[in-house]
Amino acid sequence: MLEKILVPLDGSVTAEAILPHVRRLLRRQDSEVILLRVANPPAAEEQMLAIEASLAAAREYIVGIKDRLEQQGVRARAEARMGPPAGTILDLAEEEGVSLIALATHGRTGFKRALFGSVAEHVVRKSPVPVFTVRPFWTYELLPPGRTENQPFTSILVPTDRSERSIQVLGPAIELAKLFEARIVFLHVLDPDARRKAQGKVTDEALARDRLKEFAGKAEARGVKTLAVVDQGDVAKSILDNARFHGCDLIAITTHGRSGLSRLVTGSVTEEVLRKATLPLLVVRADQKMAGKKKAKRTVQKAVGKGKR
Image 1 (cartoon, rainbow, N blue to C red):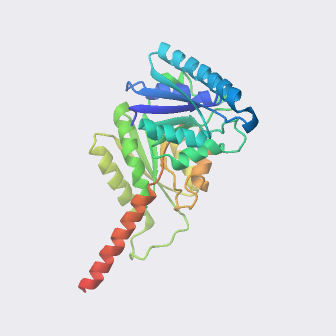
Image 2: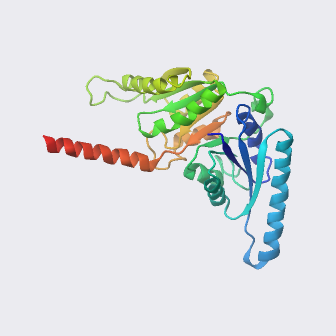
Image 3: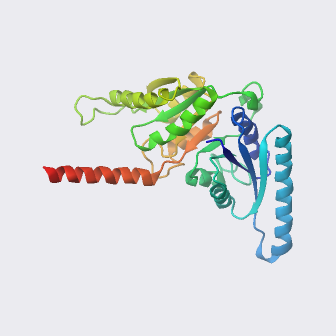
């Protein structure tokens, strides 16, 4: 997952907050880093000279960042493109076959929205590969002690539910956990007002523990230590509280929300976690096609079963 990392930057200090975390990811693997600066297309009446000037400025900036990283031992490459930022980021990710996109959760021209700007939102929602995000700290009091790039990942929180989509974060989480010899804390948050389900006396908690056991078994089979936690109450608050209580330094989450919200990334749970978390997130987009195929397969199986009867 860390073989080739795309790092979009917009020239701001806020965007560059991702760089120490990229160095942190590289502590255990000599990955290639592709640095991207996207220049805004100029107005039609300013086309030729403005395009050249914008691209030259973008190239100068991104090459400067590349040179700085290379001096620190990072294998880096610089790209300057012109076009719509989010689309250009995703196009380059596809062209290069990147395995991870790493970016700060803010818009191209600054952190104008309460959560993050439209560029990062679009990338997280549409990216076919995991996205490593970090919320720039507003005060240095929130920063963990020591240099960020020198801190290994030791404990990864993975919130789960009983949907097929939630398992899609498991592969990337296990890969990072193995690389850093980190523990995975699996968390399932119960609805305190939930009633017993139609399966008789099987409670939500029992079903949740079965699900966590399944996840933990997959991780432990790969040599990763795990901890399973069942909590109840507000989902986003529980995620943040458990990350703090268990000393986690990364949250790995799918972009679908606890209840399968139609707005994948900006559902209330993911939105609140992104807005309030003081640690990085690894966001994996739920594969709608895969979920649809599984649903169709189950429908066919039921139909076949009825036919046999």
